[in-house]
Amino acid sequence: MNIINNSATINLESWFIGIDIVVIVSLILAILLAIIFLVIVSLNKACQTIPIMLAGNSCLAEIVYGSSMLSIALFTLENDMKQILFQDSLCNFRGYLGYVGNASLLYSFTLQAMYRYIVVVYPTRITWQSTKVQGLLVCCSWMFSIGSLLPWLFTGDIIYIANNQLCALPFQLSVPILYNMLLTYIIPILIIMLIYLKLFLFVRQIGLRATSIQTMFQARRELIMVRRIVIIIIFLLILGLPYCIFVFMSFITNPPKYYYRISLFFVDIGQNFVMIALFCFSQPLMDIVQNFRRLFVTIVQPATT
Image 1 (tube, one colour):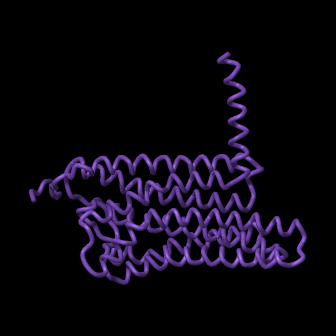
Image 2 (cartoon, one colour):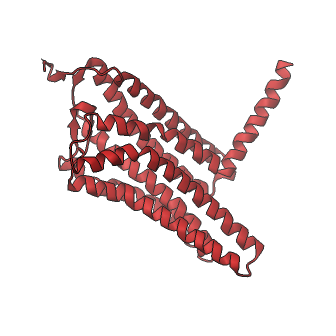
Image 3 (cartoon, rainbow, N blue to C red):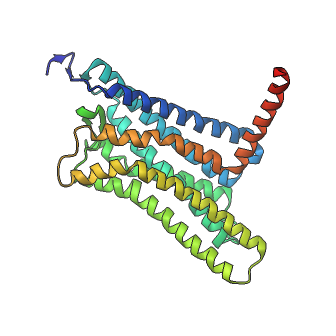
């Protein structure tokens, strides 16, 4: 390699730039959708409910995750265009922030599922459903996501991976990788799946008993909302399949040369689906969007006739 200003030149693969641009555009769109969601919620009292607040927390987590991954993608694109290997002073922090954003996003969906479960199974526990308690849980989930991953920022386990032009935990059989997979991926997904299963069995059980129509309607509605969260999680699991395959492959042999580029491509482009799903699954928000659309059509149609 030729050394140029403390950087090393590399051979540019033909697909690098195209992948970088697609990822950047996808992340920008996801961040914009998350911001629009939060703006609409903050300006409309009809959307200021606990379920929407928890969905807004997911949008905030998406902004954190999307911004960190966008910064990584821009850094990767710059290095690819210059055809150099270079690690700046913020590289490790960007990698850490990406893990924090991913953990906070998955745990935000966990909080949504937990709230739906409490509403159905423990309807008399009003305190558990209060804004104060749910807000406290949101704060705790962020503190957990930030604190539990903080050691890897200072132990040197997050390193610059030259072929993939980013700083992250290298795929190999190690404590950091196993810890990260368990804490930020497996545990929240298992909790969500368990909540859905228990809620499904509970709704089925009360359906066999003499139960008021209102109670049954409420239980089925919350079950549908948890099912929608499960749909988002399943989609993320599908997009994260290359990531998981490469991780488990690294326990036995060396993963492909550009394993992070490939795996993060699928994960990052899926963020738009997450935001679109949050919009569609938040009924008060969809009502406002549809009302705005009708108003826009009403204004535009006379001008075109």
